[in-house]
Image (cartoon, rainbow, N blue to C red; front, side):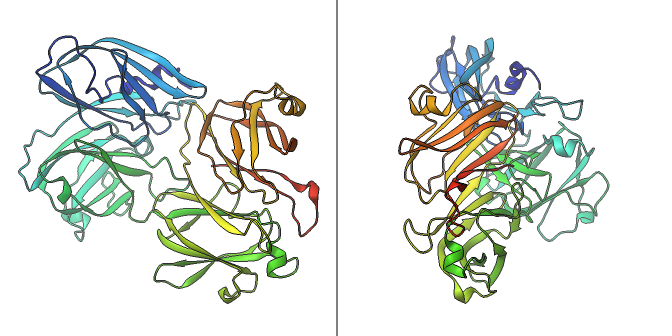
Length: 481
């Protein structure tokens, strides 16, 4: 891995400068913005003259243009890493000049293993030289995708939605190249990316993109890695940055990823004695589709670390006995909306025949691997257990009895209720002991769980399988990215 001081170099001039004091002139101003396009870098904060200027800028986000009085500033950068923020770079004497508009991109990757990744670098991108009319947009195109960069030069086509590729002249870019595409009518377009000279291999297809809402503006369109989906259709997506914010555009064929976990301890009894269940999905306006044909307690579909691709949309999910018909459903969900490019884990929890009642808990998964941390999310799926405290400590530092005696510090999650899902927690690489405490007893004790930088882990506390009447079967199920 590269030193952490290299990690944040691309954002040393990040943009949220309003409200900070420059050293010279309060009348003339310059504009700066930053695009976070390094696919494995953590979020960052930027301080200007000791005052927070931008906070928690994450991957595929734009700070938008921010104005600062012309002058000289001292910039400090914090990487948001496990255990708190760390000032990793101090840059004295940053000059902001009058009427300037500068976009700064982070390109490349933090982790560089055996020369297989593309090093992290700074890329300064000027606005298009064109002055767009009120019914035009001016475009600057940037190739900022390490994944596509590894494939060689690419051709980028901007066409009407129905036009063939061979009817257009592409812009050819290598990795880190910048092209001024000038001003074009603020109309509906289609963006396609192919390897250079290979029109029958489309790496990315935007489908219809309407630029009407950007009329009169100058845009930076950056091709960046599709890094936050487990099984992307395309290696890239587009980050379109206007003056105020950024918009992500994914390949038109991008699906939603779904995986499911069966955590209902008595659903088999409610369906058919000691039998599995199945799950149907009905998209709004469509017919029911058998999503999972046979599903037993603690099973995962499709597997621990994979997802089923489904059409994005609003769904109703039905759980039924394994009989092949939706008519025998024992549970029907409310509407569950699945977005393109997002991954979801759906947990079947609770009792089918008693309380707390059976329900489905969908949660969105952020599968972007971050080179400086593991990301941990916790799910309380043990129906027989009320609120719990969850302790995560360095392996071997404390015994289970230490936890009960209050000697292991504060819990990671306190009074964590059944069917709750935590936010992601950034965790340093290492081995950990996980204890789930309920009613003064360590109900779940997992020791020596190993987490590596780049891991995205969902830890699910589950109870005993009441069909098998095995009270010792409580435990922790770990899903990965």
